[in-house]
Length: 212
Image 1 (cartoon, rainbow, N blue to C red):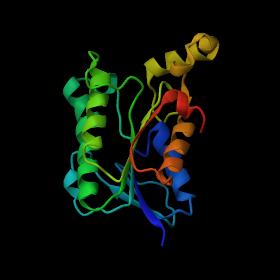
Image 2: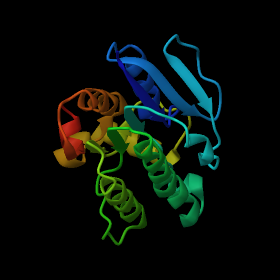
Image 3: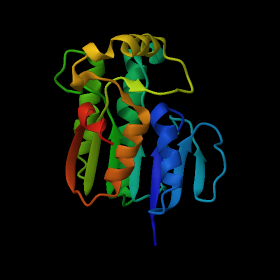
């Protein structure tokens, strides 16, 4: 019998690519997707309509592999507290609930430069959530740290759009470790590593994600 995957953050650049990959993957018999709105139907897909503050709905959810693609920006969140809720509290609540219900693998989208000791708020929060989820000791925890994400988003992020224009013309000047990475590559990395035999904690820097 195949495994069950759960994905949170299906409307973002990585999440929408990853959802398609998981639905097409024979490794999974069932794919649970947490979403604020209905998704296109698929025989393997079970969409769970949930507001991000209704985490009590997670208490009875069970999955083998959990893919967390949640994330926002300071511009969208508007306050540090709101940003921390989306990028720290929600992923940790998700991980805690699913770990208690028997999940064995957790895959988290973080960011280049994540460091709980950073003086930069964004990087600090990303580092803190990495540390908190790592301490839950899943059989396997995979953390992905992409740089600027390339691809077509459902929503516009003006700062990223400006960066992409710069990258298009001057990308050759950017050191390899900081180069943008396609959201589709990050999604493929998550799909592939979820099916690997690796155990313990593994971190994939942006330069590594270029190879997927």
